[in-house]
Length: 42
Image (cartoon, rainbow, N blue to C red; front, side):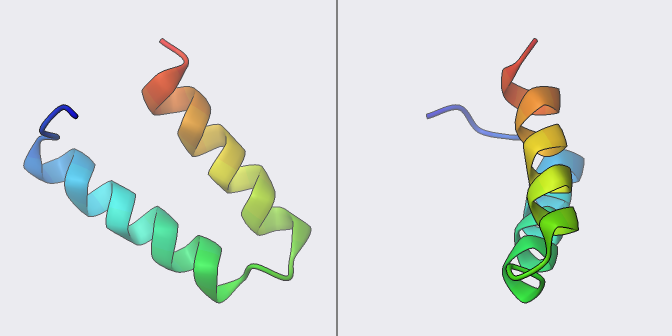
């Protein structure tokens, strides 16, 4: 497991909180998918 930088860690927490708080909306899945692509699809 790699250690993320401060900004990446904050972004991860933000995205996860938004995702969990809006789990019943298709937009949350869309942004979560974009997040995965951004950090793991390089």
